[in-house]
Amino acid sequence: MKLFDFRGGVHPPGHKHLSAERPIQIMPFPERLYLPLQQHRGKSALPVVTVGQKVLQGELLAKAQGSVSAPVHAPTSGTIIAIGDFNAPHPSGLPLPTITLEPDGEDRKLELGPLPDPFTLEPAEVARLIGDAGIVGMGGANFPSAVKLGMARKAEVHTLVLNGAECEPYMTCDDRLMRERSAAIVDGARIMLHAIQAQRAVIAIEDNKPEAAAQLQAACEAVSDQPLSVEVVVIPSRYPAGSASQLIQLLTGLEVPAEGRSTVTGLLVHNVGTAYAVHRALREGRPLISRIVTVTGGAVAEPQNLEAPIGALAEDMLRFCGVDSAAIARLLMGGPMMGQPMPNAQIPLVKGANGLLALTAAEIAGLPETTACIRCGRCASVCPMGLLPLEMAKRAHHDDPDGAMAFGLDDCMSCGSCAYACPSHIPLVQYFDYARGALAAREQADQRAETARRLMAERQARLDRQERAKLEAAARRRAEKQKSGAGTPA
Ligand code: SF4
Ligand code: SF4
Image (tube, rainbow, N blue to C red; front, top):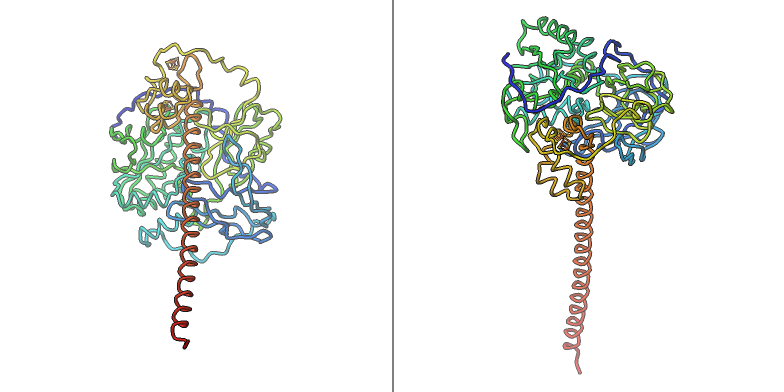
């Protein structure tokens, strides 16, 4: 397959050797699982269980609300012990509504009848089952997969691209998944092809993962006599090749328009982990209740790739890998380029999180100091979106988020290439996050003010209606009195 190029990009050190040769380990259930109701884009899920209720593995705990949402299921059997706020996997550490499940250690599964062959089902029914399984984009996008498949079918997408690039440094969970569970990924890809009624799927893998490419190649060949073909394409390693827009550009030469959906190019991009989750949902009836996650970094005694239950705390996963939480100076959910810094290790694993990076004080102390911008332009030359990071950061720094927006903040995917390339070590992405936070806060304040205005107007209208009704009733009573008085003999 002919490959094209994308603009910019960088070559950060991979650090993948720490965990790449560690086969996937199944993590035992911790004492408690914390399941946020908002693990996806769209409306948060609505609880359908109550405190004290016993549940089975795979049982629905919270249902999807509205057209863009995803349900949440029980990762194991146990008792619901709380429904309330708990730490969210976000740098702010602000709480989110969360269901707390205490596992009973029996892992009893919800009984299911025989599952139909997905290829005998209508495409829309396959998408519905994927939605019912709570599957969201597992590469970090968190977008409900069924919604994305529905949009792709309407847009008449012709090719499904499975993203196995895993260009983020330190992360190796997709690599291990592709090496160890390749047949299931290929099966999931074929099921998704059926759901969108496209004929071709391509699995894109960076050239630094030859074992994964070989395993997937063999899995593709094993089903090559069947309809709905899947092929493997090896792409050059360059960050951020695994971003959807850059991957599409690499494979087709087409640019996804700003503010446009990738489906306008005729391609739909999903992560390999999502294809694996689709296989398990449709072939085993297992909703998305666990995921493969890389636990790594200098503070981790034994970096590993874990199959961990959704809702396990970061500290549970770190403990399983032999880490003393006190040794961690910085904790990221994800890798060093796009990961989110976590305020502490009491943060639950969510569906879209691919790893935990725990850095020691010594590693952080080794980071260079920030100095003034020398206007070298390197940040702009490596930006894959063709933006001017320096100009955006300058406006964010001067509390001018609108100015940052005017320079394309909305198109920035926070890949971190600019900050990585900056010789002055300016934390550019943090400036962008700050500007986004300011815009979000302003939007929230506007919404609150709008809601308050609407409520006030509604209240005033109600009072006016009541007053009018009172006056009308009084007028009616007077008129009736006069009428009855007029008929009375003097
Ligand atoms: S790379 Fe850093 S020093 Fe160079 S122009 Fe951009 S912000 Fe300034
Ligand atoms: S400006 Fe945004 S998209 Fe461009 S390199 Fe920086 S983080 Fe990546």
